[in-house]
Length: 279
View 1 (cartoon, one colour):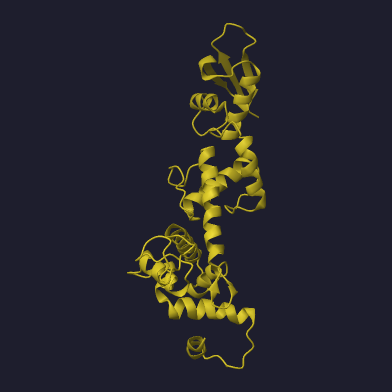
View 2 (cartoon, helix red, strand yellow):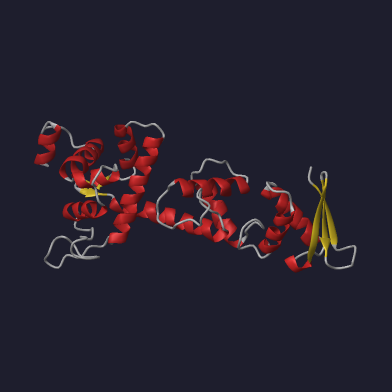
């Protein structure tokens, strides 16, 4: 506490409010006392994840010391850490990505830092809400896993990495999911998006890879003009299924004539064909 008073020029008689606790955490404990943590989160040259994790373990015994091994505390006497190296790495990397994203948005470094650290406030003086940061990274991982299971790709066109970082690839996949499900498209995983993701696990759209008729959807998409809206392709697929074309092996041809699409079956039965109006 004396270090914070000296470094921040605090009045010893000042009331110890939650706001003051937050200031001590963000302006002293991380920035001044354990600068390697601040350096890593803010992307300073030469900053390393190991050094940041080491400083976490020196400040809080609950964190694993990377120089001693996973689940081993920096402090002896039988102390055991309960936050693994992977968990602290996920939390630090998530904060680092959020800081970088804030800077890219045009925020000043001070404001970008305040925004990041706002999700990692103190529970009590001297004890950072580290579990909050860990939980945030785990929640992002769960979202990434759900999106990957449904077949949504990142901005780079590749399957999402389940790394607990809310980066551009994850945001892109979230936006596409929101658009597909008629949600407000903002790239943020709010309550409505979470609810839709949970529902999609058991009731996926035909556009999503775990739907039993997704292969038919893909086969029809390949026969429609390039750039056809996925929602249009989904409508054509559902109409085809209702008319007996319920598997790629039954699909003979897809003909487009103006606003009309004809889905033809391999069966000679004229009932097993579908006409869809694109308007």
